[in-house]
Length: 110
Image (cartoon, rainbow, N blue to C red):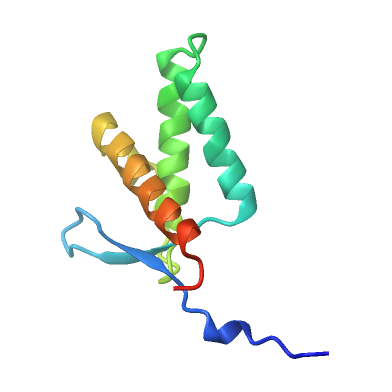
């Protein structure tokens, strides 16, 4: 049987700068399958006419927290940091992360 070396595949990341005093740079990783499923559920809830603002806000904060904590540096971001980010900026972070994921999935070997 032929061998397989996963180390030859480059790990794609999305460089993200926090708005903290140090302007910390994170290298966000692509999501695993479980997180992808969670992202898909988030989109369904966000687009549902039965969702209320409180539920969407909580889900948005949770998704942004998971996105930012999925980083190469293993830096832990807490929910208090996320709550200080404007809601529209949180949505932008999610949308840009989706773009990153789509690019990686379109060409997983590059």
